[in-house]
Length: 58
Image 1 (tube, rainbow, N blue to C red):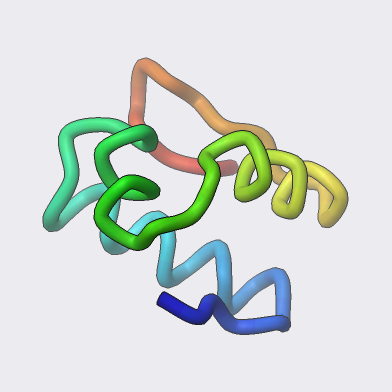
Image 2 (image 1 turned 180 degrees about the horizontal axis):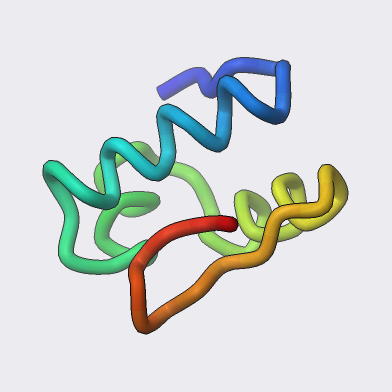
């Protein structure tokens, strides 16, 4: 999957997918064929942090 370049749009797409179709960030990224560490780093660079308990970036 090609994620949006805009960090806020990317955040929205990722959080929606985590909520609706994946049980973990690892499962989501495996389905999208991307490295979860890369996704976490990309969103962290925009000021968002992954909350594992809530399964969402904030």
